[in-house]
Amino acid sequence: MVRGRQHRYNPDILVEYHDGRVFLEEVKGRVFNRIVFGTKNLAALIYCSTRNMKYRVIFQEQLEVVY
Image 1 (tube, rainbow, N blue to C red):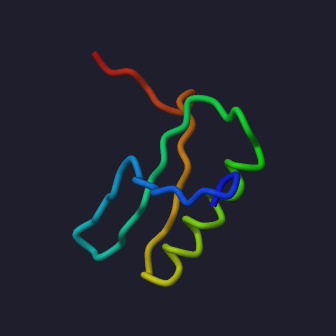
Image 2 (cartoon, one colour):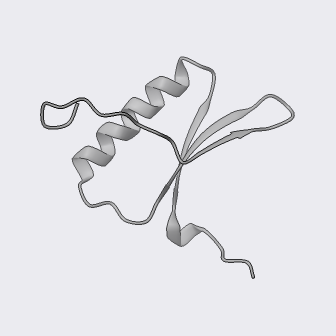
């Protein structure tokens, strides 16, 4: 809940490996509000831990552009 309103969260990427590992990945360009960012990350971690998944945040500067 943010500012008294419930919101839906749609992850950016769900990665399933052949060996059974599953990662929920969020790609971020910039963090505008650290409190909201932290709250969303905590909710994602709890969600993933109850489903035997890993959660990973990838920041835009970590990504390579391939042409």
